[in-house]
Length: 348
Image 1 (tube, rainbow, N blue to C red):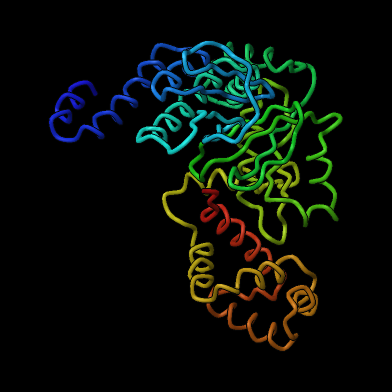
Image 2 (cartoon, rainbow, N blue to C red):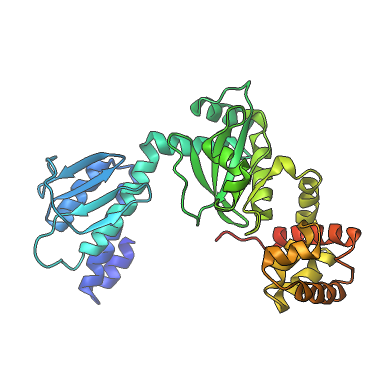
């Protein structure tokens, strides 16, 4: 970075100053600077007071870098991931590097908060306790951090990070990168349940729920299994069934593992994928045919005329290569739909 700054100095003075701001905050982050040191740096670089509010606590330094009480006012600011924000108290026109100072201050302050806050420590503990690659000792330490009762059973609840977060109070929640996109993981007790689990089991409330996968109940030492099953359940969720409980999946759980490890897509799932690609509305009707008692019931659920459903059921049977109206065909269709969802669910 310093070498790049030196080369740019003779070419573009403004770009040089911008790089100096980046290098300055990078050095503070690498040195594990505290929030007060970061604010002091922003104040010195900008020549005006700077502050941060996060977790209900506010810290502010004046233009000289001295701690001071925050006055009311609307200032240029940047949000932090944990709901807080940082600001600089610029009066008059913005200076050339104000935006960059705010951006780098927000990044550095977010990292500092992540390193030190109890909430962040709980998130790291939750990520460890569901990680099947973590050592037993590390997971045991994480369980203590989360005050987990080793004699109780727990579940992991998975929801897409892209969906609005459900308020969980003091329940630990962490966003985990998965092959299917970022997914939010929440620890829930199985014995008394959380509001989310209870609502998820309530048939009337299911339709109002965001897509949710509820993991199997396990002892704390086996929570990676609950997390893995919650991910499978989430991938199997659909607009018709947004909440899926892994404990109700039965043989679908081991089947999902086999499908994930298979080198090729299974033929029924591949045929279904081609059909849905050619007829985007087919998925909803096929889902209704697979899960209702009759084509008439499927027509009521989808709002299509009964004769239309009959015609499309015959057409889709020809394309898939089996009769989706027969009892055995409905079983094959249900499995094909499950495999299709496992192969195509993304939460980016």
